[in-house]
Length: 498
Image (tube, rainbow, N blue to C red; front, side):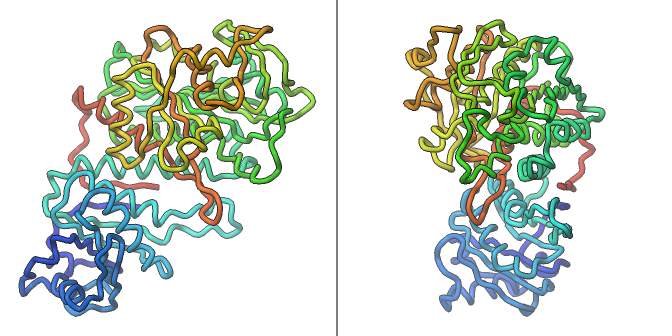
């Protein structure tokens, strides 16, 4: 989908060429006096005075061939005070009035707005119009092909627009791979998706079972043993700063399907375990967006990818394995496999001498119970990193919530047969999982863990991947990149998202 940012007044929007037009109407607009040339404003004002446009954010009124407006279909929608959250709600609601016969071209008229609201409009229309089609017998291209966003001051909002378009591109790639059924998203398929991102700004390396065994990644190998699908360990590198600059390392859990292994999951909803590689998908999404954003920093992405299956060679409850760090692990529950593949990746991350490590994983059902589907769980050993991620999440409308990481929680992970057990029981399950991971982070390295088990996908009639936390991660990286000067961008106002 193509996006374009234009400086447009309401009168100019009325004359613009588009199949459909969404007018975002703030509460303050009720008191404006539209000019004689502003047919669009007069139409909405009359609707307000007649009581045909409700008062709450998201309420809309649709019109067909409105006098003085070139677009055939017009939707006026309330956006409250014009804040980012209200704008996103309004755009999603307005698309609901259009999606039965979706237009190919759309103009969203915002007028005077700020960076956060503009980004929310771009992300909101992309989210509302997204459809997964890859494994349908007759895949249809996305109906909406082009979106123009009209604002009062386009140059001042150019940076926010570029960030939003890049984020859409990354988030939709993450959705694509998380949504694919497990037989269409094997570890080898994830590796190919990563290799497709290689280019002038991104290097990709893929390791197979032999290389992983040579590295001593016994925890990752233990999870992969029950599957016929060979594991892959994917390394992506983005260089936006001097080579001497320490990178941020992103680690994404890539369990392409999780049966629970020998500790088999219940059959109900097991199909949703194709989403257990959403952390890996989010890392792929970030690396799809980075060459568009070109932040002035270095980023490394690590994706340990495998299936967790109950085959004849599968790891058994009670087995003890040796991780890449040298620590031995008693596997009490084979369904706590994500932390096993992540711990070896966290050890591998130390070779980059990172400025920070952020791992992303659909790790625990306990986090879903704690936070539901609104906020991702955030654990961190560094206050500055935690605050940066919290702020990035709020700014990107992709929020997280900091959870405790007290050393006392590690007591539950003690084992009589190994250095550590992989589970600590039901109480504080998401916390003990984070404490397990913390053991494999180097001393003095700022580290954060994002548990996205509740936010990575939706169930029920809206079942599908959300692409979270790609917006949070890209906002965090963009803010870090502002500490240096970005690479030249060529001054374009146009962007595109797949």
